[in-house]
Image 1 (cartoon, rainbow, N blue to C red):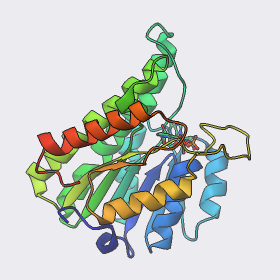
Image 2 (spheres, rainbow, N blue to C red; image 1 turned 180 degrees about the vertical axis):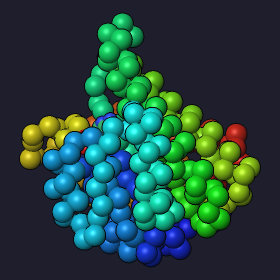
Image 3 (cartoon, rainbow, N blue to C red; image 1 turned 90 degrees about the vertical axis):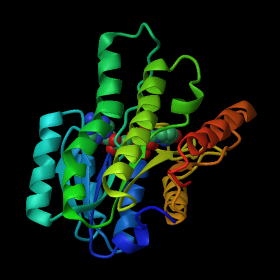
Amino acid sequence: MSTASFAAIAPGNLAVVTGAAGGIGLAAARAFAAAGMRVVLVDRSGEALEAAAASIDGAIAHTVDVSDRAAMHALAGRIVAEHGTVALLMNNAGIGAGGDVFADAEVWDAVLGVNLLGVLNGVQSFVPAMLDHGSPALVINTGSKQGITQPPGNTAYNVSKAGVKALTEGLAHTLRTRCGDRVSAHLLVPGFTFTGMTRPGSTEKPAGAWTPEQVVALMLERLAAGDFYIVCPDNETTSEQDAKRIAWAAGDVAENRPALSR
Ligand code: NAI
């Protein structure tokens, strides 16, 4: 394995998860806490965030909009000052708003602002201190299959998630150059998952959908294996062709960047 090991960093260390008021982010925060980490939950949705934090022993909650660069920088400074260095950063907050090429500027601004710039803000705010601290650390960015397969009609979201893929690959390269394997970056590519984003207000999981807990279990398994690219396998809701494209894209990452283990 050639990445920072989750098992090695977990006990007692600090994990920051954005978009942690529900869905995949909350499931991840619970798993990190269960592994012995102190967790910081970040979300823009204050009420849901408080409820989420109350469900995890010792969790700290911060209501912040990840698309607000200054607020993210201030948050990182405050967390490091009050709680010490962050060992795990999961940039996971996202919105599912669609929008074709000619969607209103507001739609594009919102989707790119949260899904792509929100991840960049997290990286630029938290990673410098992780690099300076000298101990092993992990960064996980949540992308999407749609960032790889680019299904028609949802262009703004697709572009934002394709950007997260490119950003994470660039980050992994920079980290490797700066500190070898000590701080590693990973791209989580969830499959279709039953959350508030995909089924708002529903209690019935569609057949073939992942649960957030399943996504997180797979993520921890792949992190332990040192994978850069964590792709939830296909399910019955995605086409065979999509699966082939995803396999190709994942293979392409390994082929063009042999230094990145997967
Ligand atoms: P969710 O809606 O349950 O969770 C997303 C969280 O992000 C919410 O708590 C929301 O309040 C928060 N959030 C949204 N905008 C924010 C902002 N500006 N600042 C801070 N927090 C903000 O959805 P889910 O499914 O758990 O999504 C998590 C990530 O997984 C997202 O990035 C999403 O794009 C991605 N994803 C989800 C898939 C699915 O099928 N559910 C599939 C592929 C990717």
